[in-house]
Length: 393
Image (cartoon, rainbow, N blue to C red; front, side, top):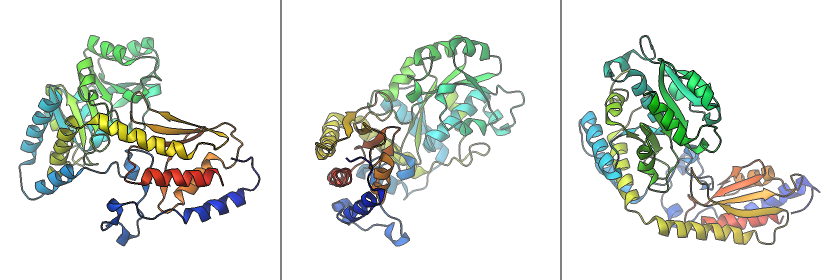
């Protein structure tokens, strides 16, 4: 990598190099592409299981389960309850229900906490007259999903220290919200959060949407003492994008069932179809029986492929990072030793987006982050080659 000399020269070089990148990546891209007729490009996903890129690619058994489910009529509430009981038994938790994504589970958990034990009170929300209506959160746990609580009529109470938490608790407190990936950032750690909630008989909720793998996490947080825990169905589980898991106490789940479609009221728009329910069941069954060690070896090989293309490139530090909590899979971290060095991370990021096919990666404060989790077929080689072209331009 060179010091800034000619930004125009770099952009011209990167544009020309993009022509050398294949527009198709193996058999998965040679099959009919339903997006092409709409003029929508398929992309290489080096970000991870993010909603904005479609979450994940569902395994064949999940797609088959959804297709089979589409051929029959059922009574949806009956399916919801029996699917929840089946998943709870598989995972090893007291109760489970399928929601319309993890964000939907936040609303369901908040609703259940505010109205418990009176399921009929769900229908009066967002009018919280006569109900507990306060949710306590740590400032460091701001997630961007606060609206999912606010739409119930809840009032958010922000705290930082244990002393502030104790002062914030009142007869109006319905729930204590915990963002699992933010555990290292907050003053109040997971164990103390659970302990305080139990001491005051307050529902504790853990948003662990992206926190599988490892598979043990599915029941670990409930066993630690959280009353309710959510995981996304369309992330590490590789289930339908419009599905989520809510796990925990059965009595709260009973109330939660009244807060979701096909019931009216606050959750009517959070519709989970029979196809998503059966698809998520298939995804969980597959996930519990999957060879995760073999998958990790595959991911490590993908990471090594990309790192190999960066050997000898001056000016950046390239390493593998495996987050301890959310998205616990290999990521390539590219850190610029000199922030003024050119091409900059933003230039590389844009050049990757301008490739054919477009390559999506994450910008960080000091460089780029590339997840190998959702790369397919020869895409690791394509990403490696493209990065090599850009960084040696």
